[in-house]
Length: 244
Image (cartoon, rainbow, N blue to C red; front, top):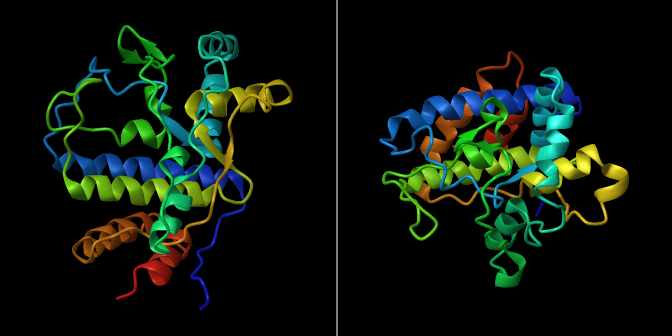
């Protein structure tokens, strides 16, 4: 059987545009939920946040645009590289599940509840360009390290779908890891790559959806596709992975 595939934009500027569109559409979509998250609530802001190298490039653009390169190096000095992620990416995990393969617990990431280096007085100092891993956190009740977040199942599903798509967009040479390890690798590539735990981003193998979730996810992808005049990645994803 031929494995369905979706296109991957080659130009970095187009990749970044796709990412900004995903951020904006998701922000509006998630407004429907009565989340308890407020400015200064930072329980989820830890070194466990993961992202792609594409999201790291967005952060670097922001830092360079505000002339804070030295500031970034000082922040990263507080989080030495090497803690890394697990040994499997979201799309690898999805592929294993779709192929009915067991996933070894040792391949999944552990949690590091050390506060994120970008927190300043419990406020994110890179909030405008925070990765999707941060944007997708949410809870109906205030959470803490000893109490899990509570969210609607469809939000968790959409979070997973968009995480998969973001990884897919980076799968032509990009990689995944913790936020700090990604940034270490981007600003100190000749020094830190041996210490950082970088996983190659993988193409989308399919979505982990229940039948009743397909309509909601398809509507969201159609909304994303509507931001572009020509059919592109989101249209391909719908055609290949969300058939009528």
